[in-house]
Image 1 (spheres, rainbow, N blue to C red):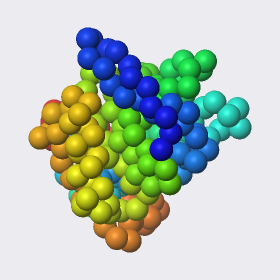
Image 2 (cartoon, rainbow, N blue to C red):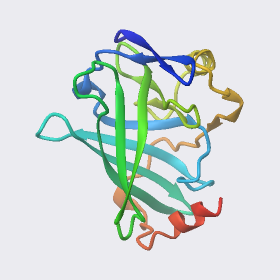
Image 3 (cartoon, one colour):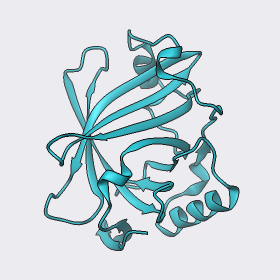
Image 4 (cartoon, rainbow, N blue to C red):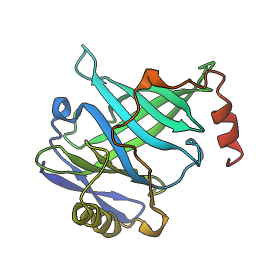
Length: 194
């Protein structure tokens, strides 16, 4: 595992990975579990993120996908280090909303709290502890590893009772194999908690 650093935020400390090997972190990650949030459909499944380092070596293209009611929902954005001079894995992610007419920038924190030596699974959070993701390179994770990541999140001050496992099909669906919600109706529904 990459080295870790304690970060103080609002009086409590959180461990953040130091020296993240960004090129190794790139590629597809499947969401094994997460805190439910307003920006994803409640019935979403096969949720995943694909990261691609851009030629400038500092910007990452982000593609988040989920399937809801048989349709592919997605949003694209960018990620970059919050402090380019720091070796902490604290990133900012920027998306433009609504997805069908991207005009409003929304920026959030993406902190890598843990990644294993093989870069096969990761724990990602943010300083307010309102969002948490358990990610894996495969659509499933060994229960023992999952429990270790849950325990790590608990140690970092997360209310792990909020974690919900994300249904994943194996093999996962292909991006072009399902109709896409091009009207952004999922985004409007998410505003009302549906």
